[in-house]
Image 1 (tube, rainbow, N blue to C red):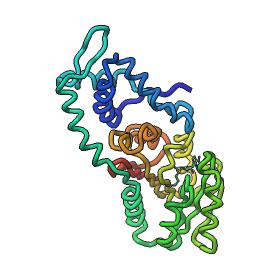
Image 2 (tube, helix red, strand yellow; image 1 turned 90 degrees about the horizontal axis):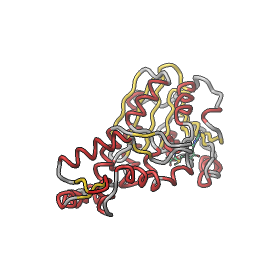
Image 3 (cartoon, rainbow, N blue to C red; image 1 turned 180 degrees about the vertical axis):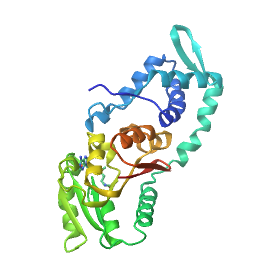
Length: 281
Ligand SMILES: C[S@@+](CC[C@H](N)C(=O)[O-])C[C@H]1O[C@@H](n2cnc3c(N)ncnc32)[C@H](O)[C@@H]1O
């Protein structure tokens, strides 16, 4: 499957940095830069066919125009572009963003939990939560500790996740608030059973992201809340997680998928390299 050309705010932010990095390696044409990015992100195909990063040509043109106006790149013979001294200087200045970039998974999780607790008005008793792509129960255990009844599911489709549910079950033994099952969210038949569907760092590696988000809608009670924490497509996530971060949905893609699946409201909170998505049924 060939990747869908992508654009939007996060992609532009990444390109304004990465074009200077690529041109620092030598002059290139626009088409060459698009191919280099696609090739360097090819490992993403292991997670989802079509998961490598294909940049939309018009988005690339817009970024190159902006960089040229700023005096950071210039056209040379053969339709290629080269970095200028001002471009090298600007790229060195961006080193600060790279040094300060950090993995904010814990902060994003804290944000997700604070939204959930505020919505539940602090009352966890009697509330049912589904954790999709639970792995070894990273988020499920935190929510059960707060008093929520949690079902953690994982399809275990990757080598690293094959045994995660058996490990989670082992750790949860004797805890009445927790249940773990090997299951794909698209096949779970528990219509309108949950007050909350949550997911931590998992949507980016789902093969059919829209289908899974649609399933979450089906599994939520009316008025229930979907809360997802995942990479925020953009420069910060690229600097921390590399091309893998582009497997995640961008802000614009989230907005489109959420409205297609029928949710009544949508909000996205940025937490450095992560985002927390909030959507109500
Ligand atoms: C990177 S792990 C995240 C684990 C954990 N939630 C965490 O935050 O550490 C993503 C998990 O999503 C699971 N997964 C992918 N697609 C799924 C699906 N359709 N239904 C259920 N789980 C899925 C994978 O098997 C993998 O274990």
